[in-house]
Image (cartoon, rainbow, N blue to C red; front, side, top):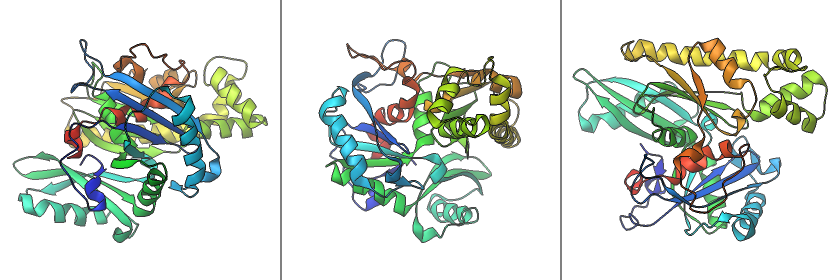
Length: 367
């Protein structure tokens, strides 16, 4: 399972293996794009994909409701302005890979008995139905075989509401783009992290977006996923309410002071405590799941943070103190070569994690 490639909309072709694509990440109020030239390889000490173009644009919150693009023309106007005059570098292709926010998808690792190849599909769907409350005919579903052991089959299953996928496809059509793949943001994060020099260590990845913290456990592949409402806008809203300030003031307090030592620290800690408690609880639950299902021979030894919502001072120290596991931030731009392009500012770099992960998709992942 590598997202829903064009087969999801009942077409298939093998003529695009040499054609480039770019990643388009659609958030609640912004889009981020990136195109790179991988030259057939991922980042390494000797070779890094070259960034051809990147950029971001904001749009009104009314354009997206519950993950569905309800007013595509609003986003299309912002995107066209970005493509026409605000890109750093250039986007040279119409072929696009899109990501669905993890909090709008259903993902699960399924433990099945030993099965024949022709039995896996039906067994996976039947097992997955037990965990999904949404009617199956309202979802697009896909999976990949994660492992085949002597006595069991393990699959990683993903489902997303058709209404969300169709709204993304409508937006792409308005923009004149050819959608070649749609995947969960967690897949993009995992692909990006695979470039990290320490990606061989069992790791918890936390991708902080605007509305959620999307969590995955990675050990050569994604083994478990979860999501909690702990994104950047959630932090801002909590500070706004607790300190009785305006939203711009709350955003400034979050980015300037955060959870770090300051005259506001006690108030901010109290404001964010419910959200952080929920996040820590989910992280511990997932770590226990990993230990129970994959044993303690290869324990989780690090936590990686990604995404635009991770810019809050003191966040990494808070997580390290509570989890008792080393936590570090991973800058997606360390994996790329700019070739003369001006890189984004430090504060803006984390928000490109999903677009970066999409941009390094290999043709073999699609066809």
